[in-house]
Length: 374
Image (cartoon, rainbow, N blue to C red; front, top):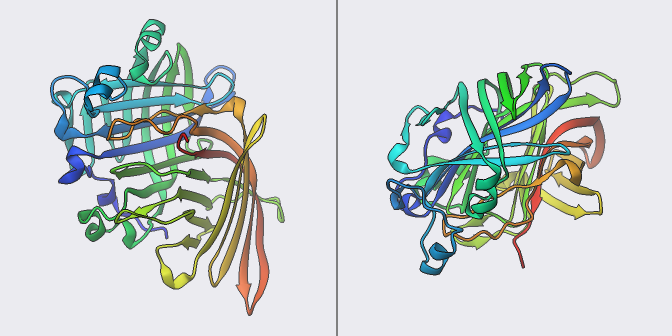
């Protein structure tokens, strides 16, 4: 459902989650090389972990001595990455003594800054530091960014992330997409090369997750670069967003559940297992071949059906790195990309029959799939 609720974008690590919890604000978009015009997708993220455990230095959960002692991570991490054949991710860590967070959303740390309307800062990691500090979980490189944010369409998942359920910490991993379609503008400088971000060609996306742990499997798919295969027209007021995997509610795992919304030319087709009255049913697979990751998702309610097939070349993706609040890093093959392509078929159900609303070609798909190490 396209309903704005910026309170869900507030800092959530209070109460029990302050000692064992994470919160992040994610932004992804496509930029253009300032000289050549070549497309280059990026992501920027502010990730915070266990504020009540921190102090004057970042605490890294992947340090062997911390793992032996059971010391949990605590820091704010500014996470920056880019996709394509030279994909990479770089991380900058701040201790909690250098972090200011206030409401409405305002995060400040060093020269890094985040609100609902802008994200700016810099991340730089030398080759030596990337090699000698595996606890940083990143590559080497330098990225400067100064980006304006204009959120156009939201995915409000409903009461599952309401204040009541947040207070109870009912879900292990909460989700809210305040800007599943977002217009970004500004510039980035990646390793000395300038890139321009334009609202009309950025195909931007922003969301947030928070909770006490991650999910496995982990699924995410979204794009607003959409063209009708029936009419050949660009769908300017459309976006789809799929996320989830194996959510836990009050510690009980719900196997293979996804939340999704297809905002199709101004109308919402939502597939949300938490809205029991819609009788949402989901089937999905994530498949790895020698060269690709392939997602197939089939979801239906009493009134609609959506079939989604997306693929992304592995050479354009990376294994995105996070450690959980408990200090464990169980996701070591979490495929993450921004160059996915595919097709969505959207149907309306009418008197037991399916009527095709549209068959849509999608590009610049943000995509993610992974399962915990076994």
